Amino acid sequence: MIKLQDVPKASWIKFSIAALLFVLWVIWIGNFWILLGLPVIFDLYITKFIPWDAWKKTKDGSKPPAWKEWLDALVFALVAVYLINIFFFQNYKIPTSSLEKTLLVGDHLFVSKMSYGPRMPMTPLSFPLVQNTFPIINTKSYSEKPQWDYTRLAGFGKVERGDIVVFNFPAGDTVAFLQPNPAYFNIIRRYGESRLSRQQNSGLSNLSEYKKRQKARALGREFVKQNPNEFGEVIWRPVDRRDNYVKRCVALPGDTFEIRNNKIFINGSLFQEPEGVQHNYHIITDGTNLNKNFYERLDISDPERYVGRSGPYYTLPLTESMLQEVKKMPFIKDVAVSESKVDSSANQVFPYSKYFQWSRDNYGPLVMPQKGATVNISSKNILLYERIIRNYEGNTLEVKDGEVIINGKKAGKYTFKMNYYFMLGDNRHNSADSRFWGFVPEDHIIGKPILVWLSLDKNKSFPMNIRWDRFFKYAGE
Image (cartoon, rainbow, N blue to C red; front, side, top):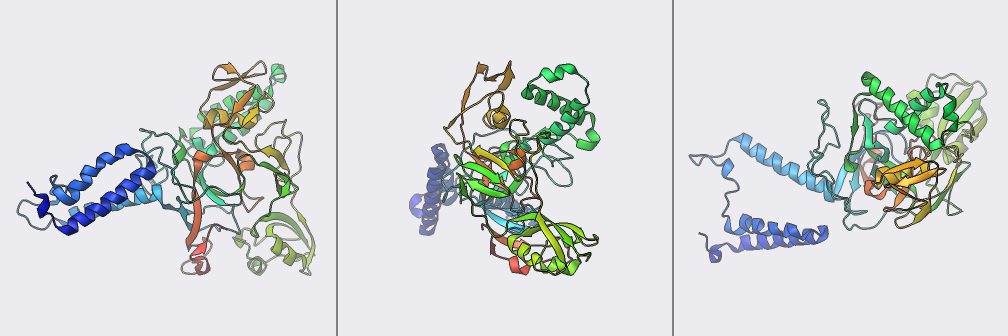
């Protein structure tokens, strides 16, 4: 048995440092049961009673085979990456153009977990570096059991208005495996409403809007189920296993959010948009065909989407500075913003209700749900809050005879358990964002992009596809 006085001083120093870091980590997490791991650290550095590396030793005392060394290194790397991804940062690749010109398709980002405080994993048994599905073999990369309650550790700050935020897609709780986009609830709504409109049933006119929506969803779910080759298996995903999205936060809990003719107003005041925000514009030329040089001069991403179109009519995404440059060009006859007007015959945006006649460019006013705040609910506004009440905060919900029933009891009010945010893309007319799927709950927030460490242009071949000027660019603007 080892004598403590014989332990080298260097081992005591290593143990002291490791133990101190471990205790500080436990205090940060707030689960003091983990302190039971201290004896393990003591044994690793001091007593060495348990032969932790016995599996690598050979009978004759020779050097372990290379595969054992590689396996040891791989296990250590996976554990290290797992812990780094949970508590500090993770990699994220921009897949779509919803944040052009701020972040480009092909940008690889470091996403800081410390900016808003790391979120403890809700599905702790998962494979690092994979969000929800192993590529190629298309199987789940996590175990649904056990599942932990939502807990967020202390960080450097909180979500601020104007921040670019990475979060789990709220409407991604239920997914048609072969068609993850658009959201499943939008798929069944669209197909269900289409089938419902074809039903010649006079009794439908007597149903409330909520009941019609429920019937349409049932028809939509049935349609998806009957077409497995098109939609695949319908699966449910825990919060932290839903697809990662990145958008700009434009409204905080308690804010009154509104869009008037493409201008954002927060609490009645005009919101100062970043320079990279762009909208679609209808352009008329004098007959001149716009060529690749035109698109490259304006730095319009993915010009191949536009090259080959014949004039004189075009629709292009432009920032304010790009718009002013286009107006100066002698062959441009007219430029006008693409407008999405309110159509009383169609429910265009979330919550897709006749009682909320909003559009992509004219939305709200909408008061953002805030933890502890109470709101009046009725059969007229329940579609605005139903996902919060049922999906995000875990209640049962139904509407009977015009009365809202929550957890089996009539309810005229509801008090929110969490904070909620409104997220938009900077490429304002080409972004699937909160205008189309609603609020982002606080437990879905992942972190803040801080750095572009690699950027690749998918429209060019190596090495011309490397955007050197974007390396180490600050991504939080």
